[in-house]
Length: 287
Image 1 (cartoon, rainbow, N blue to C red):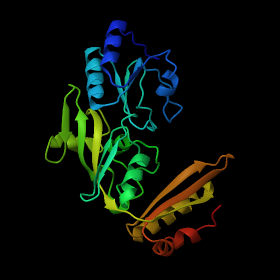
Image 2 (cartoon, rainbow, N blue to C red):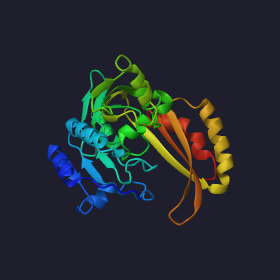
Image 3 (cartoon, helix red, strand yellow):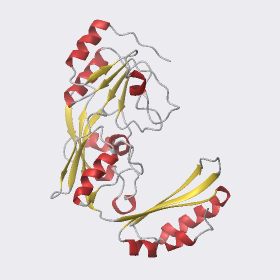
Image 4 (cartoon, rainbow, N blue to C red):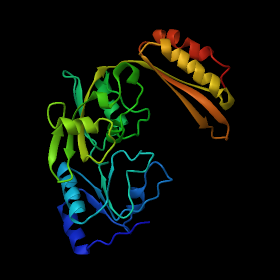
């Protein structure tokens, strides 16, 4: 584990500039604050800043730069690779910045960088709208979008990054810039699937689509049927309408049984879904 010694006076002065909370080793919240979804990632940052505003993020970036600190950015904290936390550095935690604003007439939504897909979907569905989000509601919007972003609506509407209109970014110099096709276009290009190290994205604006009822199915098969299931999935998707998005997943059941599963989402009426998805339900026999 990497350790970092920080000047206590500087740290206290930094904490006083934040509207959010600065968490240090020994604080009651430290262990829960450093924990991410992937329990194999067991890292110990020197400090964790739970930001309450863009101004807090700017202060964090400046403090890290001036003190030579490694930086990790935590959005939803679901990142399987464990990049949302670091050893010995500063975690810029955006989990308290989750506001979502929907413009139903323009069919756009702007969400802060700590929002999850569950947060975004809840607000957009109030207007029967949605964008291409992740496959898990607790995943952060920022991390998934910056990595490209596969989701249940992608066959019809592309990746999450394809639906990104603008991004508000705090750069390594502590400057706030807007990235879009018309403003800082190179940065916008990099953000859409580049993964990270371009800055801290504090808000994202998405293009929305009309999405009413959907039908979801998850069909389990024995693991040794995986080869045949993959062949079937390839054939099914070659002719299936773009309203149907499918995934094949290999997993272990709670009792230790290895399985292969086909997950599908159909964006449309239940009657249409039953007709289109009938081959999936008849392939098998399923578990």
